Length: 424
Ligand code: PGA
Ligand code: ZN
Image 1 (cartoon, rainbow, N blue to C red):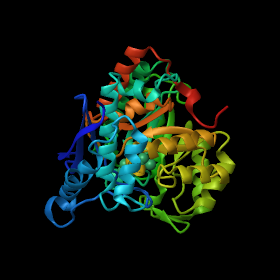
Image 2: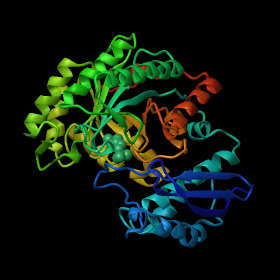
Image 3: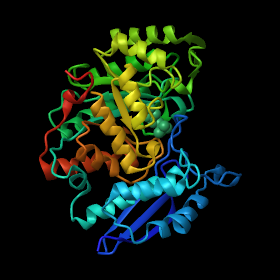
């Protein structure tokens, strides 16, 4: 009864107005699941590759070939298979694609299909998705990591760093965490407007700053927390995604805003100085994905007091997470469905992080949609942390709002500060 009866792909549109792949899966019992592929802009080189049509139309971003692959190849390949056996479905998808990086059918086609199958199985079990993936294990509401200022590739490179975020470490519930963040988001906007530093809203909904130095953003963020009536560090702490692969390679880092170049040691000293001066609890991709020695050195120096997350460096690969744990390159893993390409491989990367004693953050991409799957995975896997972008634009708010509903329905505890690495 829960065998796959129908798989259909269609083109829908993401938060940047670009085409993306939606897949709908129907099981024999009539249960329906749907998934939409997100899209990154600052991608790791080892991620699953999206299949895009190229050419001049729609900036080359169209996904007609990926959708055709869903309807022409994936649908017949999955028809009749057991829809509740996610691991077998995902293995069949990987085998059908046949490439190491999912380039043939496209990571976008595969991830949308995999997500749709998961939703259909949850519907068949008549359970919300979070409960389906939890399978009876305890769950928590995640500590959110919420962008206040957006930079890097998401804001015309107006500042070099990509995400200036807050984490409401003093909140007692997810609902309170969002309310605290809302106050800081408003405060940051008005402080920037008053100072003539506001250029608009970046790709993930954060304020788009016009600053002369990267550190100005840190000062503004710290002031905004205080302006909103909170204690920086105790109530809300700062979290950064440096996304260093965007401006660094081969051990050279070009800070365009400040017109200077740093080597690995210079980057480590710069970030170390910020760690000493600001209430920062988490730093993502402090060095480029090709700078493992730098990451190891950074984690050796600061990993006992700060969460150090690998995103472009780990690309949600279980093997890369295990290796990073063995060499001590990071103490936390960002978990993105479309970097891995299937739900099963994503889960494996998450489990590898747990096995290595790392924290994990389930994360959205800069190109998103109304799909709220990641909120359910963060709760159901008991990941402890969730990164979705800012506190504006409905592709972001849909995911925060879904967590409010889950909190209300479950009464589950809030993961809070204890979810952060280093594990104490
Ligand atoms: P991306 O950015 O989705 O554009 O890759 C998000 C991130 O770097 O965390
Ligand atoms: Zn990142």
